[in-house]
Length: 489
Image (cartoon, rainbow, N blue to C red; front, top):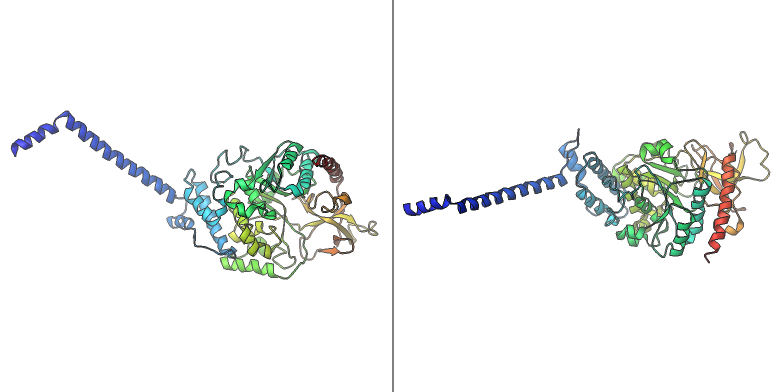
């Protein structure tokens, strides 16, 4: 036994033994360090503590976003989940850099159509040059939803922005695949003016193909999510600006404060109170009180008007994570099954989904205070009246929307008197009547004999001379575009 022990001690003292022991110890140490690194990485994914405040229970609550299935009618309950995602996103941004994997997994569980898209669209918690399209974060972009059927109106808008108003902001045309906006029409629009690019939403949102093919209005919130710049202005093809909108994100107080700017629809009754009651029921299901805006300012929620938002122009700043999440919620409301089962049977298309998503999630948003006004002409026989003191009737087919200073800013319906019958010529736009601020002001009403809508009240105004000149020039440019389009056939 002593001989064996002596041999063992001799071996331990040998160089071979020393090398073997060193390898064993080094291997164990490396394995231990790897386990520590894995543990730290896992801890970073599942726990991050707010800087300067926030308890562990708060963080755990933000991260526990329920993923039990909700049916398509549970808008209010889904709004609560979006609200939780908003708090989680705030923590990610405040404590950057952090692994966003778990957050994005939770986001896609709520909105599966985002699967495969988050790496190619701008997200405020992951600021990469690829996601922002290489544009500076302060540089806005205009996003026009257009197909081959309304390509002519989109061309009028592009030409007006560039040649009449002098806009330098990048313009993106969003469409839903080759059958929506044909290649020859994309080529025409690309060559019409500089700085025009395209977004194929079917490629940008591979998991939403069923939702986006032949979706019409439904693609609009998706287009905003896909915009190259986080500061984006969504435009219907038939929206026309009267003044240059390039500085909107810099000068509009409400947009700068909330990251959103919504415009009102016409204030007019159109049906029963079912829409308002539906919104109230969804807020109750969420256990949420109406926002100050909805409770105190909204004519819709007071039952004065049947419509709230006109979505021909929507401005958003997605550097605010709540704005991004509100858009994702609005996009969900416009997915095929949800819009067919609930959204479009309750409301008129996409119109109300932008503010509704923000409201149900408890996120702040901003409406331009005036409801849509009337842009057209004074009815024959009333032109000589004192506009400041007497009621006059202004009729037409174009709603006008004001900027934050109360100046006519943009209108719906394109340059033609009737966009469905361009052979009837261009609209005569000489006067406007400002829309409602309170329920006591004049309302819209139809003139069935003339096939137009009208407003009647005190305070009709002639368009300012500079804006009149812009209208004349946009008609001239539209005529040139029409001649260029004829060459395509």
